[in-house]
Length: 327
Image 1: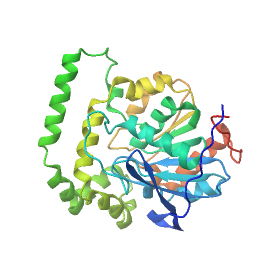
Image 2 (image 1 turned 45 degrees about the vertical axis):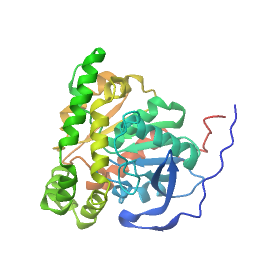
Image 3 (image 1 turned 180 degrees about the vertical axis):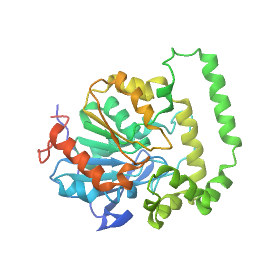
């Protein structure tokens, strides 16, 4: 079976730059959403896609993209729907904003923009999205690096499907609670006050890594008019996602190589949770990064880049021509 895909327009790409504005920028429209993305490196090189964590955006890979490009990869990054400069939609019952939707967004990006399979590198929520995409769309994902892979369901026993009436009551309760929260007041308040610094410093062991550029990266999307409705939508979506969209069942189904990196001093998601991963995917490789927090790629980029590029070279190689998944 073969298929022809028209190359995405290149005219809307903005020139490459550095810092949080690294790479050439573009906007890709997917299912009614405007999705911001960026790229750096030779387009003929094998593709690597960077996926940010909760509250962040593609600019969070400011210290990593160039190093991966120098190692022989064409490096892409995307702002997930609800984050960064991508659309910030409201809750829709039949189109929940959860890791399944973000995985579909990522697969569409691979098909329509990257136009081939790729290695996925995620931070936190981005890791869960990468694993979800690898399971639901396996021909598009060659391997995954998750740094780290948090999911509260990893601490809970796998349960059988609840009766319909219990699911209905849970849905109503979650929606009511999320709607009564004054997010329209709380989100801009956090973005404009020292509360933002408090959250960032809890994510970093090295407090010196929390700089003005990082603060602006996190605060700017939170000050957009639709930020609160998007946060409400993803809170509802993630709370109500089905069991098969949680980390443990996904890991059990995942076939691609997986490297999990975890900061030993992660205060948001303690490194002890990493022990819950191996029983679900026995061939994953786990490495603790000493004295680092929840964002090891930004806190100690030299170490992170070296560990990832070494693993990629050993497990997936570099400089290989792309194979189209429909070939």
